[in-house]
Image (cartoon, rainbow, N blue to C red):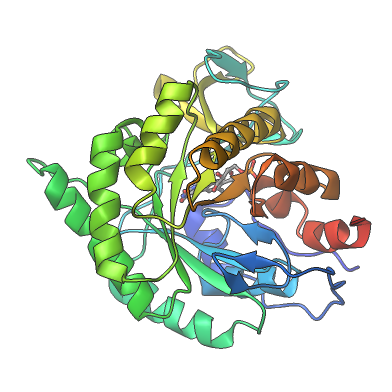
Length: 346
Ligand SMILES: Cc1cc2nc3c(=O)[nH]c(=O)nc-3n(C[C@H](O)[C@H](O)[C@H](O)COP(=O)(O)O)c2cc1C
């Protein structure tokens, strides 16, 4: 296989946006089985979560490389710039379970990095048109999910925020999105739009309004780390009436110090993504799946976090996920879905 283009972490977000590669013509193995995502037929359980697919061209590129559920990066009702570089800072660490305080940065990528984008967005005019064109060009057997987030303004109530989420969701569906995801968990922003999953009452209010706005279109909520039985069951009770499923987990938030012991990102915490969060995300998926079964809820789980091999994907499916999405592994190794499909043993 020729060297495949990928996200360049030394370049700015806009440069990577502009450098989106064209789809490639490569052979992708078929995965046997009757795979579904939110009840819709799909060629495999492999997808890309919100983040790596900056625009429609990135979606079509990864679709050509064997990913079957493509999540368009989180968009907003207003244009928003990206945080300054570094946006992706490799870290040195073992498995993270939450509660860790500080990690050392690493000069080389060893599987995990701190993610610092701040959920940038193009204007709705841009992304609505881009989604429409992308959906029209997506090959059969693939689905386009669109991730949205509300943008809090001074003096906004939770109803205002819910309206903003709902407006973005409505626009995404009108542009042709097969599914919508609302991001209720972003450790890199300090406003309540980044932490909704920790407040079941507010999460419910927003989810209900989004559901109202999009009718029967499949709807997922992205959450971060949820630890106790009580927290899991409160979040499920709040969201189950309104959503198709949950995507977990976003990341594990910590501070990062460089080799001179200077704190990166002005000492603010950033989400660690990649290999280091596999064990915690798998355990959380299993925890939610057990409660979903015990409470006989009709909810799907998308396993996200640290997956990089067929074995990892199969562990997520065994833990109760219906679909498994890879961000870091897909960015560092664009042919990972092809390798997973080659390695697959039923
Ligand atoms: C470059 C990058 C950008 C991301 N941006 C978003 C985002 O905009 N919205 C979101 O819900 N999650 C975002 N995430 C989190 C991913 O969706 C995913 O939860 C996380 O990377 C864990 O998966 P991984 O271990 O396979 O990377 C981003 C992750 C990365 C690596």
